[in-house]
Amino acid sequence: MIETIYIESEIRSHPRTKSILNRFSNARIVECERFGEVFNPKKQNFRLQKKKPALIIARKHRNFILDAPEGFGIGGRKNYYFSHMLNCIYDCRYCFLQGMYRSANYVLFVNYEDFQNEIKKIVEQNPDDEEITFFSGYDCDSLALEAITGFVREFLPFFQKHKRAVLELRTKSINVDELLNHEVIPNCVVAYSFTPENISQKLEHGVPPVTRRIQTMEKLAEKGWQVGIRLDPLIYHEGYQKNYSELIQNIFHTIPVENIHSVSTGPMRFPEKMFYTIEQLYPDEHLFAGPLENRNGLTSYSEKIEKEMMNYCDTILEKYIPKEKRYSCIQSSF
Amino acid sequence: MTGKINIVVALPCEAKPIINHFNLRKSDPTLFKIYSNQDHSVRLIISGVGSSASSRATKQLASVSEAGVSTAWLNIGIGGHKEFPLGTPILAHKVTDSQTERSWFPQLVFDPKCVTASVKTVENPVFNYLNNDVVEMEASGFYSAAESYSTREMIHCLKIISDNFQSPADKIIADMVDELISKNLSIIKELVIKLQFLSLEEEKRTSDPPFVQECLSRWRFTVTQIHQLKRLLRKWSLLQPGKDVINILLLGCKNSRNVIQTLDIHLKNLPVWMGHD
Image 1 (cartoon, one colour):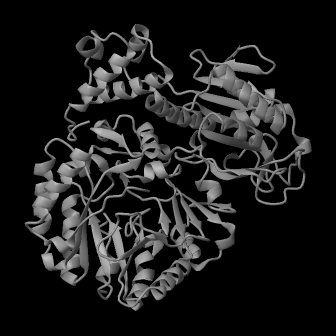
Image 2: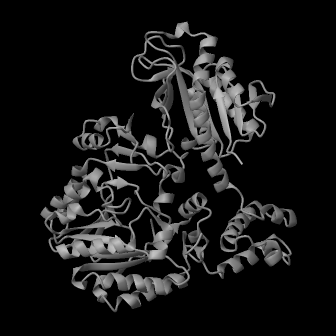
Image 3: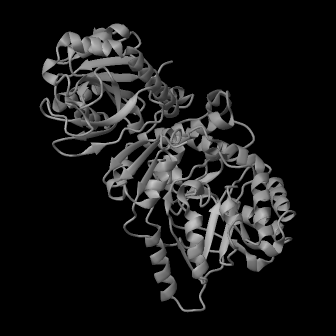
């Protein structure tokens, strides 16, 4: 699967680096000074690199934990995100990563302890009664590459010790063995992203089918894990009402409400320049031929369409789940 | 339709087998010797020895070929390594300039049918192969210049090992180089095909949608309007595939602004079916 691995010279001997190299003994190994030499240059083609992404193993030096964008939250008063990894094995056509990064190579930061120390500091700096949410699937899928990253294996015990810190694992992956084999912790939400099946087949390349994701959520819920449902982004299309209604119905007929931590909906939005980059990469994509407009520096559906979709989904959701568990994640900045 | 590839080599003895294999003829008279096949899908330039020469030649070839972002680039030449046997083809996965210590990382989005290694560009021939790099004299100049025109997935360096500890660089002669390159023509051919394939993909991605030229010939557009027009015509081709936008929608338009408005309004009201391509 991974044929080329770039490694920062400084962490060549890191235990996690060695473990990954053992796993990919036939990979081509290329040393670099800093991951940015490989990842950052402008003259790269995200679309072409998606054919054969390489892995870049690096150390993160700063900005371990960042404030979550305004409008992004699932109940916690304070919201942060952190990215142990950049880029995702899936190839969803609506994903902002396509326009955010020039390179489609995966970057894995192996110094997990530094992330954990920063999370610990934030928790200690906040009053005892405050729940603080840490979103982990912003720049990647939290679970999809678990076999390589060991992210869940390493972070669950940490969050188990720091009960006021809530970890959201946002994913489309059905690779949940680590969770099924671990003691359930109450401050972890495994949040699945969904679009209706027809949209998923068209736009979410490499992603497990909707039915498999729902089945996986069911397994997690049966074990006792809190699960989340993320209808984000909402994709406008002919028949969207019927399709989203069916999707929501399928989920709620399978997952007991008491196991659902939260449901969030969010519109599809990109900074204008980011959208332009993505549109250039995929000029024949029907998604981008939809009724999008530029508004306040963002490219999105019109306010009317956004409101219509969010309200419609909320109308369907309120039949299944109380208001206090429903959230709208409307990002006005990136 | 074939993708376009520009090949940069340093020496006539390196170029000769490639010229013969791809049926290239001399073309585009410049200070450098440039060769091309009939449809200009393969062009080759002989740069002379050294990084600066390679850089200049790459820029010259880019100009002559009107290289765009979809043009692929390949530097082919000989190089030395402490251990690799003579005649081994090596594709660079890293190119470093020994003077500046700057590095480039060609992105391998296809399966190279040969070993890959780090390539170090030096100013003068080397006789002591100190580390695991393939040493040669052109790659960094070529790469830094080619990167102005295309992206790292489409720019590559292939080096054929011509010298090692057992057979150092001072034993190299022109006939030997010709033979080393000739013996690796199948690898070169395969690499050219793969890069042309990428080039063709990129050409299709970056090409104008249908009806652009027709619109440009009927109405006068500003530069900004041309961007808007292309975007809208792309949308039209997705939502109304195969339909003649001019006859169906635009015949009555008086000017470019009218064209853009008409297209925009019409497309906004079209349903987007996500079920089919």
